[in-house]
Image (cartoon, rainbow, N blue to C red; front, side, top):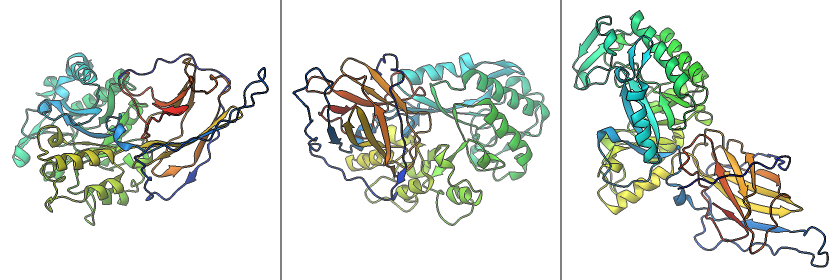
Length: 458
């Protein structure tokens, strides 16, 4: 997909009035699979040939969610280190665990060029942004502790989860290394569009911020706050996620990732993901920071079957409770979907994640274009996002959009379009979405059928 090449913005021609009129979140869009409604007939005064033509035009658009299957920053994704996909499941993301030892070789020596860049380049070639998590301790794998720290940091062996070596997180040299790494990481990669989300990692088994059942090995809130603040101060643009709402994380612009999604996500158990968000006051954090994670490996093979077993929780209810945008689901890409019905269910589940922005209505009067946009998804688009209007001569108008929450409608956007070519059968306008925080070869599509009227959707 090739992104539009824009001409310079036309200055002084955009006027935006935003009026929020929330609707009930549970209302579903009325999906029309037929042709879009006929627009009002343009009103043209043919007697005044030397005057600017006054045009009145109105158009309703058809909701079409399926065309957004590869939209950035939402849906299912896989880990290419675990194996090449055998099924072409729609995706705009991919995941990587990266040992700290591949990113750091000394107190102030970092190896991003060999430990991170190849992964970013490979993902970009696949039109994917990368979600990554640095780790030190990954059960069943060799330690990710940088080699220069091996003689300085005491390690605890364990047999649970397949066994491994857990470092002493109270060690001052290790703490200095973690702080130095985070700051250098932010300086080098904050705002890099090849990265979708950074999961904080580094601490605990799998970088998941726990050492259960050896809870005494995990550091206390004072040090967790230090790590959280270092990440928050080092990354002002790139989205962040942490496993649990611990320490001061609910007060920061950091989202959360549930790595046991649809297994221990909702319910009355206090340590489950959503109850824990609620008890820490972070259950509405999704409005500003993304929720992600992993569909629990044990349920990936069965959750979308016709008669799935009871080992998992209801996927739709988990999404509605958490407002998740993106989930690691290796089985969907590796042959774990065993029937066309199961594949259809998985694809529908992926489409339920994240945002789904729909242009519902547009009216033109006296060179003012009014556009109504509604989000029928479960979460916002978290990076800055703009509406583009381009005419047949490639003149482009751009307007920064507000952040649309679930079910939010009535944000009537008003633009002065006097600089655009007059609409007629030979001259159309195309509406599209643009963000500087996606790859050049990615497109953010409206959940709207393109149409064939004078005003169309890209």
